[in-house]
Amino acid sequence: MALENPFVPYLATLKSAMELTPDVKLMGVELEDPAIKAAFDYKPGQFAFLSAFGVGESPFGIVSLPQRNNHLEFAVRQVGTVTRALHELELGDTLGVRGPFGNYFPLEQYRGKDVVIIGGGIGMAPLRPVINTILDHRDEYGKLLIINGARTPQDLVFAPEFKTWMEASRTKLELTVDRGDERWGGREALVPDVVREVAPSPDNAIAIICGPLIMIRFTLTVLKDLGFKDHQIVTTLEAKMKCGMGKCARCNLGEKYVCRDGPVFTMEQISQFLEQP
Ligand code: FES
Image 1 (cartoon, rainbow, N blue to C red):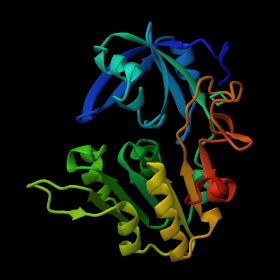
Image 2 (image 1 turned 90 degrees about the horizontal axis):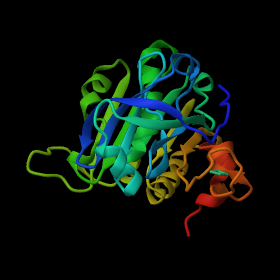
Image 3 (image 1 turned 60 degrees about the vertical axis):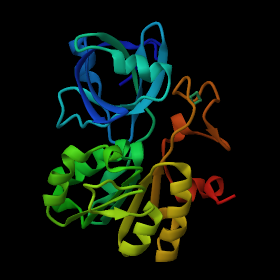
Image 4 (image 1 turned 45 degrees about the horizontal axis):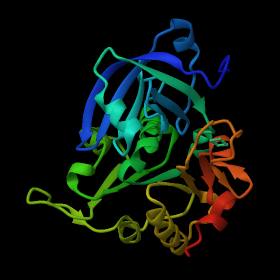
């Protein structure tokens, strides 16, 4: 949908807030104007800015799906003043929403293929709507492999959804942490090492990676060793953003703008920027 003035946020109300990890909250946000709410169409991979009035705004991937969720959902990790102000909002408080912006995962092109989702830490956020879309149309896709890593078991962001993911047909969830605790009986390994161990086949497959840049770089090497070609590897990038519309030049990657040309890119488009230093 086109914003009347894309720099002016829509008014919205905080409807739900759930602690996902010690520093990440799942925030459910409802646009106040029913007409704007009805017209706010978005797809997996797109993002929006949330504003805490008087403090500032930051971009977040939209983690809900219009067909599943009545409210927009965002996984907000507390890392600075804006995110702290967003975390401090109470249910019923007003905030601003500007968006949706950016491109999206071309999920229709993945139909009939195996999909490998590789997420580290808060990087799982933009991948959640991709997983849920595939689960909602399970017959239209091949095998789904989800490899999810985090620093500790408490930092696995979508733990409340793991059971559903694990029980879905032709779906496998592989979890790993850097550092387990006394209750953790699973892997303690880095994400790229788990990808190498699980060794998904590149045949008729797409791999989608999101996480810290260092994880993306090392995972890329492993996927290439496994036979994945650049056009079979997709990522969504984070960048410092101000406008969200390709106007302020804050988020450039060579000649591309992450906000306008991305945040979803194939490795074919951006591999030169991700090569290991
Ligand atoms: S945020 Fe302004 S050009 Fe991307």
